[in-house]
Image 1: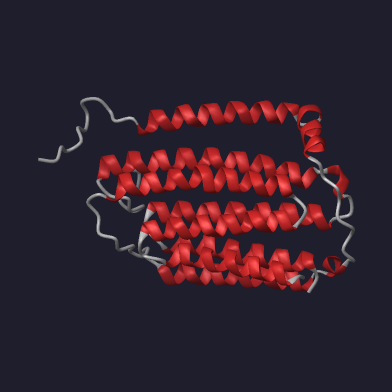
Image 2: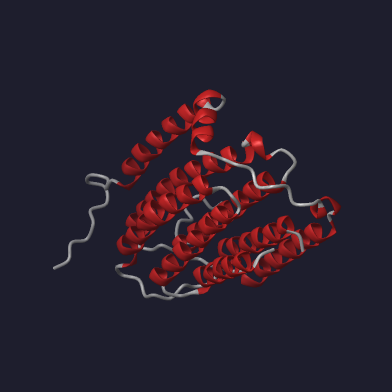
Length: 103
Length: 170
């Protein structure tokens, strides 16, 4: 197995862990943890393709991963604030508790 | 594929699996921190030292603290039991199918067997020059986004005055 495919397999399994958490668990914080794992799996792909790709001197994959890191930090802050707001209103961190918009 | 990579990948995957399966939210948050730190070490092993250190700084330093604080603020009245969604079997089937599809695509791709190129020399100076020359507009945009996200997070999490007073403990 080449190093690039090893990285891709690791990233794929990390993504599956995150997706499973989002689809199966009900606690909002665990759902957020799953989203973080999926973002990081995508970031690992950027870095792996940058490192083993044809033109690593251009630094494109590295820059993209750096910006994705910053966006993930902003997303975590807003997501956790939303969880706290929903908890304050419904007294529950269950994602099924906030269902006022359900038709 | 070196022994070091296998060890780090095992640490990352094991911690990620524990983070999404553990019932105790504090343990899950700690396992997430371990997984993300392992990913940072993998970045360092992939010759992206700056990104690896930034990953450890941002995730282990900042996001982990945020998650632990949210667990602390939210957990109060709830038992430490994470319930499952209404259709866990469907979610599990989708997850397994997607993982199998991605693994199949990775194993079938012919371009992944290219020889490994020599390690690029990436200095922090080169990254800084790229950031301030070619990527200066995205950099300013990220600064604006982070400011807006911080203000927005504070605004969202502020208690509404008068509408829903928090119950005071006796």
